[in-house]
Length: 83
Image (cartoon, rainbow, N blue to C red):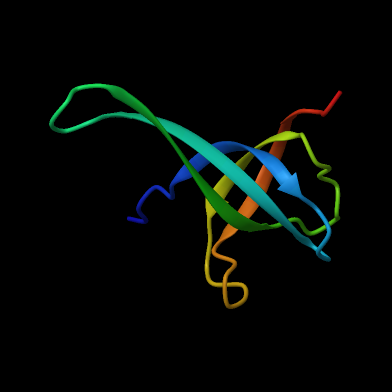
């Protein structure tokens, strides 16, 4: 049986490349020693087949096979359009 692939929700920060968007995912974690809640951000390059995403859109991305040197994610859906 195939394992469930990871899904993340983030905001598009760049759409300048062809069929690729940069998605910034923000997560919160508790610091292991001090206990303070720390916000962490990470950027992922995701495949956008039809160039539908624009800067500021909230999107859901899913793990996929390696598409290029840095692309390992693909856009599943646009959850919210930029204003």
